[in-house]
Length: 553
Image 1 (cartoon, rainbow, N blue to C red):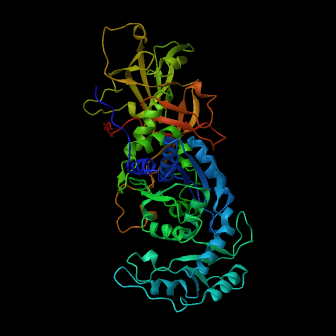
Image 2: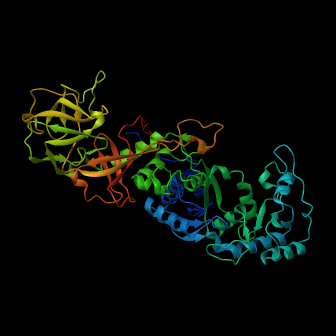
Image 3: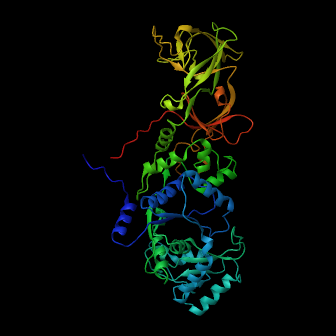
């Protein structure tokens, strides 16, 4: 018997190495979102990596809000992020806020000034950028770089006390203006902002920059592995510099490890772009089912387990790549196939009258709730003289190999009888509004009838007993092209939402918001949580899949 291959990745290999060498004694991670928007599926990958990594080693994970920019942040986002992480099934060890450490941040900034490693600068943002140079030209020192320790201490305290206007002064690290890594050319540590903070109010008017606050937050909390996306790789040098030059953390600082962020095919996950879609009315909020936000996916019927399974399937890698959207849909179907009750709903209805079926008669036929999961049992579905079928299941002039209804052809109704199409009725515009059929009583499902075979099987609902409902059919929000040279708003798919007046079987009358069903032959659909006036379903995913999952060996 061959030994099963150990599942690992480059992050876990690093951790194994440090644990084995005694560099670390525990695994402590954190998920540090900025509370300036709602979480999307890209965040789900970061959540999975941090929580799964800690769980693998029996460690802990903090949820820490990076709330160091009061202009964009709000308690609405703080609350929604906590709810979404719980929905995914994760529990954090400690709930922390970057603002918990504002006083400590300031004291550490003072320590750097006292060591001659930070100074107050009066250059504007544009001038700082110009002085910093480029990849091919070295930076130039600010004329304020040589200020004395005493003057810098006085100026930073005056900044804290609100003596200067926004943009008038910043605190910068004194590192190396000749460094080949531009982020090391005296990065800004503090800026002046007169804005009310969602937790500290107006207590502070200077706020730490991410590159200064983040390593301090990790170190103060005792985080051992700071796992972040690849765009922070160059900033790791500043992360290490900050902690290496502070007495409290110089001997044992966290290790920052970068991973590739999730890039999902034909999907944009920029919070700025998503907010633009909402503000411009293209979508109706952060939970619009067309958005890749966790709220939107939940309203669409995607389960948290499907998202976690998807994150697990794509793995943890160092190289950026684009993941096929078909893989995500595959994971959604795979999770729902054994859980969802399979029912009949006619999205685009066409009336059928079975002319030889007794008028007024209604019989109830047994139909399995899930043919692949016997434990889900069965239900009784009403059948009668008038039913609805999908309009696409009848054609006046059928193409070759069309095995559904047309004049003279016979099909099987799921769980019921064979019916044969004999006549069609059109309205004044030439549109077919009804077809008349006959049924064969001997062909009832479960009767063992095998005198003849039919090639087509279609679904249906009883016309009188069916429930009127609304069905939202979703397509990708962005047109399927590379969008080269075009703004995202120019790529909006005008057919991303189609609303249908439909019918579903009466067993759904007590369906609850968020409950997901498989509509036979159509796909998976979730009961919408927004429409209180009519039973409304959002299409989660179609039944057809072109994705072939390669099993990992």
